[in-house]
Length: 231
Ligand code: ADP
Ligand code: MG
Image (cartoon, rainbow, N blue to C red; front, side, top):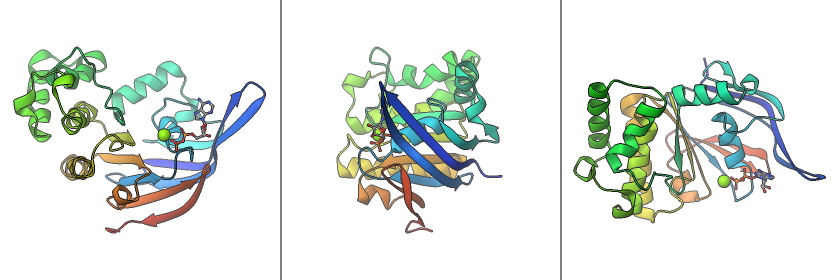
């Protein structure tokens, strides 16, 4: 069974009297343990698509199935519950909580969403800190970390609750090239180890080549659907 399946998926925003078609009928399938990317220029619909997959936004039409669930049928509360249970997010601007340490940022989903007991929580957070190479930075706050280090913490936070799916919206856009490649490599390692599916978006053609499956968006439509250099 596919992890994500979209059929004739559309999203139209309304701004007053004006309709903005952000996604115009796309079909795609993403299999479990994929390392997939949506690629396209600014405004092509990448964020809209990822937000619908992550239940942060609802489709206007078509079908969208994520982990065997028809996510269009979820309301705000059940959508949030589904997201908290199965989906991790990584954002362009990291979105770490500034007053919390690296350790506390990673621990946050385990407290807020999943209510893990303290001992198991500590063990899991330490494991994730080590996995992303940040064990010796555990007590630093985001303003004491570099961009690449902040994104490592964000990767750990996205994975800490054993998410089946991680969505990353332009996760390397605020990083220099070397750091960007290291973050993509880290995500791929985590995919290999945990069999988590990673779906990221980028408008950077170099980063795009690191994906195993790419979907190219142009003005809300899929322009081409190709296997990357590993495929
Ligand atoms: P990308 O992430 O590829 O830059 P987006 O998905 O953010 O593209 O945007 C796709 C289109 O939808 C753009 O034309 C954008 O202006 C429009 N759009 C996105 N979000 C909204 C919104 N909340 N309200 C109105 N229009 C929006
Ligand atoms: Mg975007």
